Length: 282
Image (cartoon, rainbow, N blue to C red):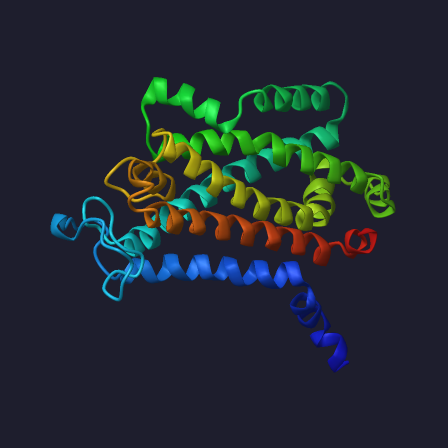
């Protein structure tokens, strides 16, 4: 009995992708949580006399062209990445799951309409959507969230629809339908709980993509605007000093790489742990 109780945790820790992804993701969350109360320096403090200082004991990641502490900027920039990721993935998950479940339950013209609308949204990547939104409402973090959130909707709709169609063919759903249960009740009580593992794993991967897209939009000047710190904005500022002060690009770049890598590994591990059949196929 004891072995059965601890086996899920032990299996999670023995899974290399899940374990490494969890460590990197927790490091990202910890850095963001700590920076809410403390950073080595204020990320908004300008000290021109200390500009472009090399990494040292005083400034672990060096300083930028305005004398701001790069470590503080990287820590504070994690807030933006997490905020955009949580809200954009939340929008895509809620709207996409609802549309996918509707398509799987109704079939026919409803399913066709939802899937063709998803194809239409796929024709406008997040960056292109952000450019169009910027032309209408201007750049900002809201533009990033809207563009990434809308692009996430068809992704979750496809995952929900494909997983739900498989569940609708299962015996317990057929039994519930024979017993007179409505399609709404079947969807909420039987189908949705069955597809949650797939949705959770996909949400983790889309969170990583949202961080990458937010950095790209900020780099292009379409996302987070000064003086608010953002990893993509830091890379944009660093390009003018790339050969003189390469650390300005190295540390924000590493933050993006490690965060995206950690979340992708975590999502990959969750897929295997929540559905062991996938792990056996590899």
